[in-house]
Image 1 (cartoon, rainbow, N blue to C red):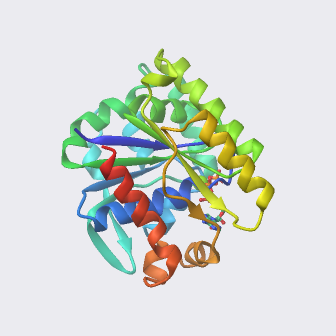
Image 2: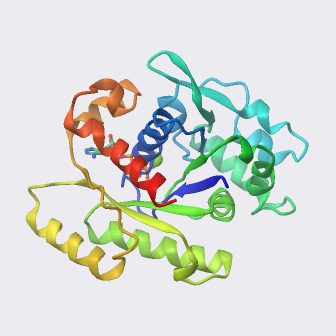
Image 3: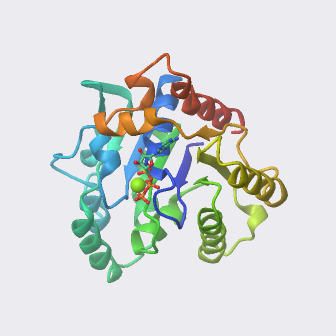
Length: 259
Ligand SMILES: Nc1ncnc2c1ncn2[C@@H]1O[C@H](COP(=O)(O)OP(=O)(O)OP(=O)(O)O)[C@@H](O)[C@H]1O
Ligand SMILES: [Mg+2]
């Protein structure tokens, strides 16, 4: 069964895109066939993977039932090399994604269009990761409906943890299920080792609220990720030997193990 993971949080800037880009790359390096879908209106994931001037994008498929979904799938380009096991369906910049969202409102089965399209290509992949925006939208609903599980990166801040709570409630509402029926993993991300108060607040919150759904892997705050963002590359490509280059590899292994 293909694992379709929505990467989400109702708070902005909590590392959804960084998680998608790095986790996707590490999963592919571990031998998994991975497809990335970019719903983030900034097209960041698309840019990381070198497909920001692609002919087609996710909107072409979502609007048109008959569109050949495979035409919107491109190999990710990492370090100048087309990846065999890592593919992307590109997004576009914010105003185009907003227009797409509005155009979808009047379409039949508007919340399920991604799920219906994905059914055709999913068997070719072991993992499909969907990068999303913090807000509510028709696109966001499509991600919730298509996903078989959810990854919530969160900082150890009140707003960020609230952002996980709100999204979890939303998923229950959209799918008419209870929290214990949702497969999800909360990933402590961009965590500062020196902000002691935040560290104990976050640890206590997660231990009490989601003891079984919190990842063992912690993504610590490191400047390598900002450097990698400048270069539009996964962190382990920028500096393979760096301690922070292993964070998302560890997370990828943990994800595979808890399959
Ligand atoms: N572990 C980390 N340590 C330090 N900086 C990080 C880390 N992870 C991500 N960042 C930086 O934090 C910023 C926000 O990350 P990112 O863009 O992935 O968040 P996002 O949740 O996708 O944001 P948005 O809601 O705007 O889509 C980026 O500048 C990124 O480089
Ligand atoms: Mg983002």
